[in-house]
Structures are given as C-alpha cells and as structure tokens.
Image (cartoon, rainbow over all chains, first blue to last red; front, side):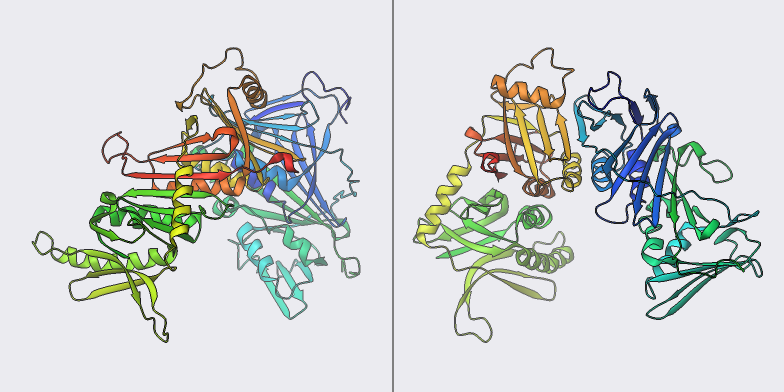
Length: 304
Length: 323
C-alpha cells in the first residue's frame, strides 16, 4: 500500500505517458466479460497490472509493462494498489482514443483525492481530461498460484481466432466443457454436453497452422464452466485476430487452466514498419493477458 | 390552400444528400412550414421538450416557380414523416436522373414538381392530404405521395410563427467549433460515462464540456476558438491552471456562462453535420435559457456565408438546482 492515504503525496506514485490509447483500451477490454466489474490495479516499477476476478473461479490479469509507455516515472514506496470500475475505466480511456490518430495521454496516480488522473497531450488548445474515483481494494485475492502439473508442462498454442471460434461454437451445448489433451495422437479436444453434444478436435499433425505448438506427455481431462471459458475469449480485440496471433493454454496442477493472449499496443502508424522479418512485433509493444480458470470440482478423472 | 413548386437540381441535392439525412436524425417527424419566401423544417417547436431544430431555406435555394396561397397570409404548415419524404424523394430522383441523363444537352426540359394535394387513399372515403412529387423519366413517369398531417390551424400556425421568432434570438457570444468530427467522436464516446453534460463558453473563446458523476469527471476543453459577438481579453497567468479552475474563474469574473444539457441532446445536435455545414458555433442564450448551435453554409467556392440557408438547434437546459 502507499505510505499515506490521508495526505496527498507531494510526488505522485506514478506518472506515465502512453502514445497508443487504443492499444490500452484493447488490452483492458479483453478482460471485460460483463457490464459491471471491479478491478484492482497494482503499480510497480515494472509496470501496471490490472486484475479482475469472478466467483473465485476465474481471474484475469492484464500486464502493461513499463516498456509500453513512452515515459514511466515511478516514485512510490511499496506497491500501491487501488480498486476501480473496469467498465468506467475502459469507457473513459476510449474517449481519449481518436480513430486514425495515435493519441498520447498522461496517466497519474494518485490525484489530490486519490483519483486516477488522465489527460491528453496531443494539442495545447484542446485537452481531454478525466478523474476517476478509486476505491480501497476489497478483493481478497483467491490464490491463483499456478503450478505445473508435472515435469513436462501440459500446454498448447492455438490461433486466437480458432480458439475464439471453437469456444463460441460450444455455446450451443453450453454449461460445462471438457478439455482433453492426449499425447497419442497429439490432439486437443473440446467437448460440450448439455442440450446436445459437440466435440471440436484440434489434431496437431493435421492442423499445424491452427495448433501451432503442443506439449503433452500424459492424457489429461478437466471440465470447465462454459461461461468462464467463454470469458477468456469473449472480448478478444479485433487487432489480435487481424495480427493472426496465437493464444497459449496451459493446464497446471489440479486442472487449473491458464489462457494467455498477446495484444498489440504499438502505435498504429508504426505497427507495420516494426514487424520484423519473422512477422513478430517487438515484444516491448505487447500487453500480456492471462486468465486463470479453475476446473469444475466434481471432476475426478484428472490424470490417468 | 395551394402549394406548387418545382425543385431545382441544387434544391434536390441539398435536400436529398444533406438536409434530410441530418433532419431525420433529429427526429422522425417535423413540421414543414411554407411561407411566401421560405420553406422551413422545424423540430420540437410546438412541444416544449427535446432539441429544437430549425432549417430554413429561402425559396430560391430549393425551388423555382414557387406558388403558395392560403387564407392565412399565404402560410401553410403541416407535420411530415422525414423518412417517408426521403424515400419518396429518392425514388423520384432515380427516374428524374434517368431522363436527364438520356437527354444531356438536349433542349427537352424535365422538371420535378412538388405540390400539396388531397386524395382519396385506397379503401377510404376520407380525402387525405399528401405532399406529391411528380416527374417523368425516359420511358416512365413517377408520382410519389407522401402522407402529411392535416394542415395546422390558423392559431397553431401563429403559435409556430411566434416560437420561430423567439428561436431566432442569438446568444451574445458564439464560439466556433474547430472540428465537428472530432467533437462528435468525443461526445459519442462520452455518452457511455454519464448523462448530463456541463457546457461552459467564455467570451475569449474557450469551450469546456464536462460530465461529472460520483465516480468520474470527464471533460474536454477547447481553447482560443474564434469568437463572434461579445468578446473579452484572454486573462493572463491562467495558462497553468486546470480546465475546471479556469472555467470557474471565468464564470466568477462574468466572462463565461455554464449550462447543463443532456448528453443525448448534445450528441443529437452534432448529427446536423450530416448536412455538411461549413462551420458551427456554440453559444449560450441570455440567462442560460438554452444552448444554441448555429451552422453556417458558404456559397460554394467562396468563404462567404450563404444567407439563403440557415440551420440551428436549441438544446433545452436542464435545471441542476432542481435535483
């Protein structure tokens, strides 16, 4: 926590500047799966982390590393945390984003009344500003410590678009979705049973363009609530699909599912020139999104 | 009661491409008020709430051979559905353009007539008023009847005329909006954050918009805009103040006025840019009675104001003291 909440500190804990607001809007929107969500923001010298949580079953984190910002002045003692309404934060940031322009904003915390302060820096004679009220975070973070399930990580990387499409299709059977990883033949299966049965198989050798990487030395099978699984891709920004990115899914100890996406926060004008020959953007211009999803508890058929 | 005129090509393009799309966004129905010299589209002038919008054309801007007569000092007013009007006009234009296209350069003249008629609609015994468009194409002719309300009574027309005169009052200070698209884009996004918008205008050309709720304050300040009307000097030493404190000081000095309007109304008034005005001005009426937006049109190819066309909106002010 910050040193004192009564007297506003002389120097703010954080003053940073970002030259691509839309990228930040995209990154934060990807963890926005419903209208009203409380988020906890943690500040450090490494960057900003925003955490949302639901029903002690699902947690999502957005990592905005300091390299994403054109300026990042961190002066806090300790690790300031504050609560904020995610929807309001995103809607507010969105007003700073001008289509076709790369807008630069300054973010400051805290303001005189512990607010989160935003202002545009694009023009001397036109200024957009915002003060968002913050809360003392009341979320007792359930321990989402993610541990590998064995010696080899159980993981696969799939094209984000294909993952989203598969999960969207599973809406029809709904309720509970079984994810099966098996080494022989190497494949990932999503199976939904409810109003009907639907099974989607990603065969590693058959779909190398969709299933980009696959590591599994033992068959595992866990069930996840559809609504939580859906939250991991429901608001995937269009830039992720356009950039043809992959999402990495890992199953950890106890069936905890980790879903990772990459969202570009590069300046729109520079986004093409910065793609290197391998088609990858500079890692410094990427926001990392992570979801942690607990399996349904009645599932006893973990490992073989 | 008679009205008959021919729409000019310029009038057709003004209405079809610019004004009707804009006016349709202001509200589906409006009054069309025809006088000896003007055709005026009026939104919300006879009922109190909502954005008032007034688009006034001198008859030459839209018509030639304009004939109007009524026992009420040659004034006719009625309510009309703008989307129907738009559809009818489009259909007529399609045929009209076909003819004009096939006779380019020829001396044969084609005209697009607009008139007020009373007809017996199918399956009805009661004659109903219509605004009718007529033209002919190369092989076909077309008649489009747009149903309209019964013409307004003498007292209603008088009331409309009185409301129109009141609505012509100009605010003392008007500031020019630099970029309508930018402003619209901003306000469209702002709508998600709150419902009430504080608008402050200073005599030295600052326009300050702000939404403030218990959870958030979101604002935009545009400075050094051009000013029409009452002006004052930009105060020195306020450059480093926040937008809020600058505005507060200006209000205290009597250099600024602030009103609160609905964000929805404000966004709606910005839809007028579909009429492709050349510039827009905001001003606050005396005693903060309303927020006025005035759109100006230039004579094509010049920077001179086209006085035959005028468009402005008046946004009702919500009383912040009432809550």
